[in-house]
Length: 238
Image 1: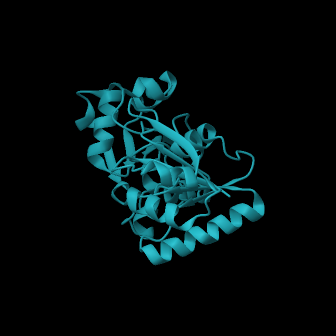
Image 2: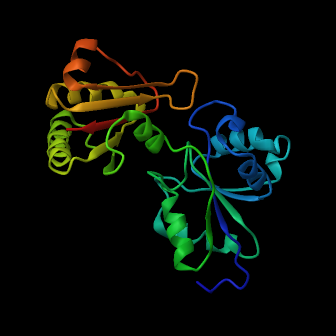
């Protein structure tokens, strides 16, 4: 593919973590920057259109240029996005929070670096760091483990290994899960982890229904806790 003669920039545009007003969690200059763009690469078209309408582009959405990049996008399809940057800036948006963090948009960021296109990260909410900062666990040494296996036997084995690493390194281990599997993950945590291991459950961050609690596994077992189908971050520290 030929080199761009007049490349624009890639702006990484954060989105709210839920259905709250963007002005509550997104700085004004970020909203202005997003509203000044005309081309967007998004994880899900309907969500992106809704966010941009709330950002200040209501009534102008149909004039924008959208391209979808999700978990099903093939590498050659990502490469085919390069001409979008000829003579214009492009915005990257994920379903929630910061793009390219536990998000397929990272492939577009990598493409831009390979072709010397400037990448501009914009300030917005990160559920991972919000959970960590509110957990009371080790914020000096931590690891984001993303999704662990969905099958219970494999998941329990993974949890035992993460707890072992946490104990050896005194390191917080950050996990996420698809909302409908939250309670299955929490149940396996409470049955598998040591009673003294501390566990933070942070759900609906930045929303009015936000709920963050850190307890030992032993204390969680006495609570009969459930999370439900809410966006949630789990952090353990042995």
